[in-house]
Length: 338
Image (cartoon, rainbow, N blue to C red):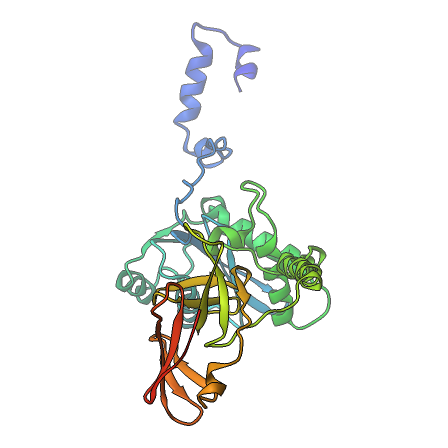
């Protein structure tokens, strides 16, 4: 218009006058082009999982509608195939997700009828959820949900054979175990704090089994050189002395405290905890139980007393000589042993 006017006329500020005239023309204003796209303003990234979720419906697609929920923090996606998009079905699906992950602080949706209804607003208010709606007919305002819809449809087309439910399960599992491009961490790790086990994990060695196998080989190699030694209660033994005096001190087994550990009572009545490697068997001349008809002795492992096989009370007390002990019954003292 300005070029045409300049080809026939000219006056000072001609261009500005023509622009001012065009701006006042209602017909010109009605048929103007759309303004330039606004600068990108991304949503703030929530600090916690499931703090803000975006929802939208995808479909009709494959004969179903799909309600899609996506977490803004982890990008975790929940998808519910439904026959139709209605308020009741939408609330049922939201309750399922909320029962698994808890209530979000904020929910973002478009202006579909079921999202702006009074019942939906009441549901949000009762659960303390802030509901934000995007600008009508401006899909990029809820861009996270729109991108989730696009991603879901693309993956469903590549899901292979099977029912809709099986396809959705395969798609969601593959999506959730895949590292996210921005964080480099899978969605499951972001939301649940752990990786989901998949068939790809079979490629990695079982660390726990590897350790068990190594320990088994070490035990077998060690045990081939070391015969098994066991002691019973009241067995006469020599226990290693870690103090002053002789290297080995006589005593008897007072208690079996573990697979390889024993409590040994010395001649002075003291009890010491010893490993089997710190104990030697002691051969005595004769047997006091045979000399006095004591029979098999069963001691109280905590008190050093008990009964023998013929029902007599039996106990062990220090002897009158240093390092000796005496087997005592209710019929008197048996022979003292050094």
